[in-house]
Amino acid sequence: MSVKNSYTTSDYLEWNTMINLIQRLYRDGNYRMSLLLGCGSFFGLRISDILTLTWAMLLDGDKFTIEEKKTKKRREIKINKNFQKHIKDCYDALGIIDMSEKCFVSQKNTVYSIQRINVLLKDIKASYGLKIGHFSTHSMRKTFGRKVVEQAGPNSEMALIKLSELFNHSSVAITKIYLGIRQEELLETYDLLSF
Image 1 (cartoon, rainbow, N blue to C red):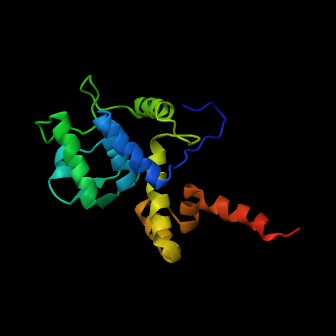
Image 2 (image 1 turned 60 degrees about the vertical axis):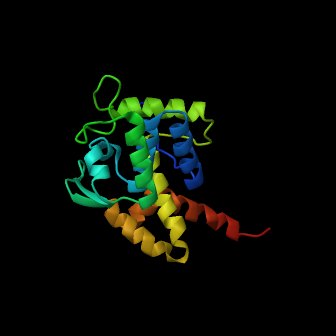
Image 3 (image 1 turned 90 degrees about the vertical axis):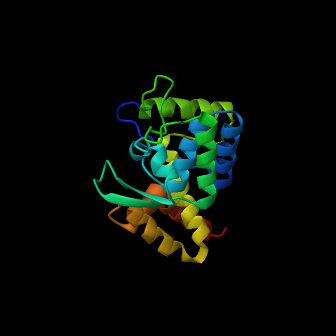
């Protein structure tokens, strides 16, 4: 939780760092957090929507549909084929028997709160020595967005248009600001000067 009147924003992890973290958490037996970070990074959903996911949604096909809590808009998500294997591995490792069970339940058998997940992410940042400023639930969504833009290469403007729609932003400019791209572009202006 932030201090009143302070400015906080989440940062993103480089894609390879995020994938490495997801794999390390799995190897260390932290299956739910491995899956949570994977879902956030591969689906680009807000944490409030991730927490609604059930095993059936993730395992009964290659896509699922949700109604986003914040926007009340219906959104279809396609599950990356390679990531689907990771979902199944987590499911098996956890010994889940009820496919209708929510994916992210605590030891108390209740769905994690966003505040609790942020505490866990802070612990993960320290335990795994992550080089990231503010690591929070929003970091996964930003990691997703940054990877999509980077992967697009010369078509990055088209990727930003698609992300703007996926994120339900009112404009591409908002998406750029959200991903920190606008600030980077502005700062590059200083590099144009010679001495």
